[in-house]
Image 1 (spheres, rainbow, N blue to C red):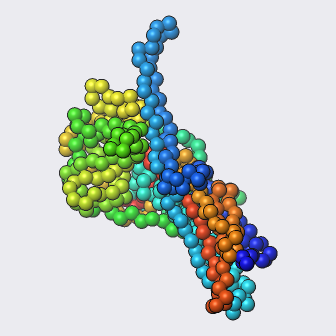
Image 2: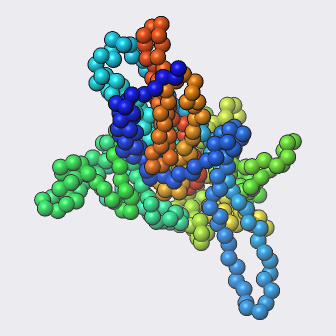
Image 3: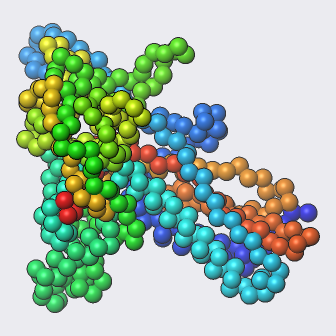
Length: 428
């Protein structure tokens, strides 16, 4: 006979789900893609999600033939249901005499799973966000956040649905600025900052306080590393492509990353951020130079040799006949090409990583377990507004008089476009 949940347990599960949904602070501010679970099971839980097209226009005269039609390259990135999180616990029949214990354990499980989802989203932004804003001083000024707004505007990131998550100390530093510069009680902005360290909307970003934040170590790669940006080579002339041909036929290509060769990769770490001399960011739509050096992130450092995997790729569209794809997705202006362009690291001091993003850059993919309900285990399941599912199971062992519980969730997180998300580092 299958175990079943009591009415009290079902009510407790509903309360648990409500609290779980409330704790999903970051997941409410990213896009959601609900997958077909049958297709995911048949594709190793991986689906390719499209990136936005970027088109090019030409000058024409009505009545005359168009001189040439462009090929459009659709870029996509792999998204995987890569997080299968479980909180298991057990209680004896003696412990169950105190019904409050069961509720407290459920609250603890809910809190941990919500934290796992928030951390996964934060890691996607902190690890791959390529827009880097280093600040020399500690947090405490509107201008710090305004620089994040500027770097997004200059590169054509949509100016709506922007979010920022800051470490507690940095968030409170901004709140202190509000109190110090607007100390006039009766002003709602100032009152909230003083009473609850609340910042709210700043420079176009909805801001949130994190009780945890990643830490980025100081770059240790040295000050004399160079890279070849000469147009004759491929270092600054990456060519985006939708697919490539291998032994098995055509396969999709992830164009978020590029493997480059540098003069030395010694002590360079994943997460390091840098600029390249003479390589300036452009507005992604107009292709006009912003006059600001493009920022890049190190994704990984292959063992041996002098290679780095970076994001985003360096798409300079240099040469006599750049491809349509290079023109469409050009993201840099190589003002001074050189085979020894200097790399300058931006994370000069160890610091907490504050993240900012545009909603469409980050995406959560809710998954689903096909748990049988007639196999002797009691099962309850429910989904949040974002589609993230919680599954609670209960099993009683008659020999040990122990009840085993487990709370599960399955999901994936993907940073679809690192050039629409970034990090804010203080004390640099």
